[in-house]
Length: 86
Image (cartoon, rainbow, N blue to C red; front, side, top):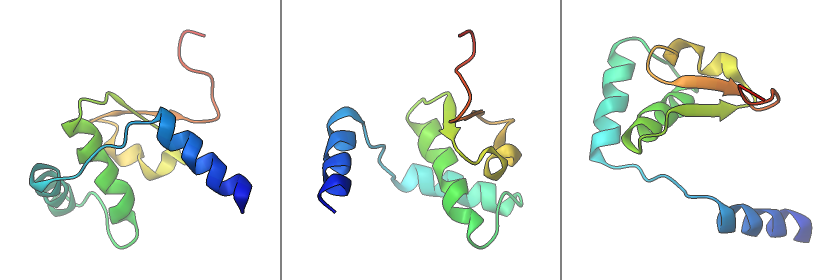
């Protein structure tokens, strides 16, 4: 348990957590209305408008298939693959 808590502390010290607001929620609702996600997929879909609102150009994930439907909106890279150009 201490290792897990230490890992979270380390992540928080080096990461910027992106906030959600009315603008990101409105964009999420637009994505959902366009058939972008259903049920549990809504959580993954919510990452997209939050990333876009903060000018993130890429989502890095260990499950790229969850974000494939949004590839026209934002780049999606596999966490396990080396970054492009390396």
